[in-house]
Length: 100
Image 1 (cartoon, one colour):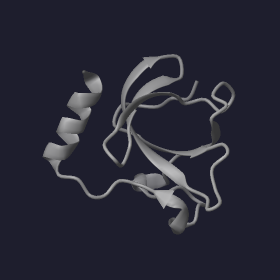
Image 2 (cartoon, rainbow, N blue to C red):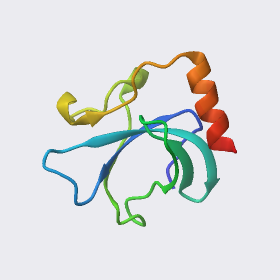
Image 3 (cartoon, rainbow, N blue to C red):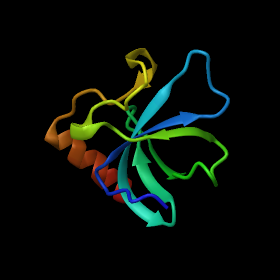
């Protein structure tokens, strides 16, 4: 089990997608148990996802941002599907929705 924290961004690549390659950003909202997390998408959808390459067959890759929260190393910018800039209010509402 990885040592993720609420509020952290992770990048997920799903098996069977592409071409083109797309690596999706997720905002971790709340830890459920084990490798299961409530996460938000750049489209403001909320999901429960198992963040384990070993146990979640839907995942082909799981990447962490670079230091300072930048895009993951080695992934071309054109392959990234991330969040647009958000206001503090938007972020608060997204976290509240994910916790309900």
